Each structure stands twice: as structure tokens, then as C-alpha cells.
Length: 283
Image (cartoon, rainbow, N blue to C red):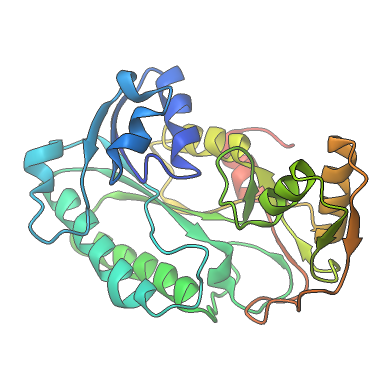
């Protein structure tokens, strides 16, 4: 397939593109930063465009052509989940870009959603759980999904809304938990400040997320909301302790230094029955 990947140089995008190339897809990679793209090992294997898809003057169809599919990963402003620009700027601009490409003839759209669409709900969260976003970011993502689903009734296309939970690995935001821990270990710090660490979360390595996304886009019959998760809750403290053990480090944890986030519940994780059924395996 001819596939556009937005946010190509982002945390997830940089891993998704090699998966697509291994599956012999033709990739059009889109991102704002050309210099960053040139650092990617896949740069010369794709058609790359440096542009802002939110630019209202962008003639996207004229520039990109009409792909078979779009994997829409781009979303600026993270990890600032509580800023209003998520639904004041990102959501409407994303919707107009995707709508324009769909009207032009793109038949398949994958968008990465977020577990924050579920809001403050606790326990195992399935795709059938009613969304109750409590942050501007979660609200913007959830609203984009609803707009695209409503548009499907007017202009049929395949929509895969893939809700990501927590991801770690090469290229992650330097302000994320494990990236900060690795930096502290590398700097020889004796203490690592963190929250109490008792919150339960659902984590996947980014390489595994990339494999799922590349596989899902090939399931042409699948038009659905899908949790992309491990299905196995782990405490943040246990996650950090495992990383310290893997690194063979002696750093001590200063638990309770930071308060728990007030925009998410203490214990939630994803149900992945639908993902397993689609992938044809039970991990």
C-alpha cells in the first residue's frame, strides 16, 4: 500500500516506518523537522515531506497525492495534557486535514487515540467502556474520534482508532519517567525523585506498539476502536525497580517526592481481547 505517516519523526513514528518498510509498503513520511528526518535510518527509503499539516494553505492532495491509507500519529504539545490548545487548535486542524484527504479518495485512516479518553475511571478498561475524558488532551482526542465517526455516515471510509496506553523505549520524551531515570543513572545520581509509585499502569515497549500498528493497517476489514496495550497492570514503582535492575544501577528511590497526577486514577489498564482477536493470537 501507499501509506502516509504523519508525525514521522516522533516517538512512535520513527519506529512505525521501519515496520512498514519491512512489509514492503510505500511510505510517504510527513513531519515538520527536515534535519531530524535526515537523522533517521529510513530517510532515504521513503518519500519525505517537511511541512505543517495544520497550515490552512497547505494543498495536501496536490503535495502528497491520494494514498491508500493514512497513519495519523502527529499531535503537538505533549506531554502537556492540560493545555487548551489541544481542542482549540490540534483537534479542528487534524479533523480538517483528515477530512480533506478522505474526500480526495483515501479509503483507510488510522489515528492513534489515548487511554486518557477514559478519564478518571479505574480498573480494566475495554473499548466498550464509555469515554469520560477529564483533560483537554483526552477531550480533544475523543472529540476527533466522534467527528470522524460521524463523517463516516456521510462519506464511508475505514477508521481504525487505536488507543495507546503508556509507551517506553528509544526516542521517548526526555521528560518521561524512564527517560529521566536513565538520565539520572547515566549521570551517576545517588537518588531518583519520583511519586509514591503505587499507581497501576499499562506499559508497552514502543517497538511492540509499532509492530501492532503496522499489522493493524493491513487488516482491511477492521474499522473499529482498538486498545493497544499489554493488558497487564504494573505499579510504577515496580517498573522503575525493574529498569534499575536491568541497568545494574545502585540508585535509591526517593518515593513520594512528587504528588500523584490529579488527572488520572490510581489504577487502570487496558483490555486487549479485541487486539488479540484481530492479530489472531493470544499473548
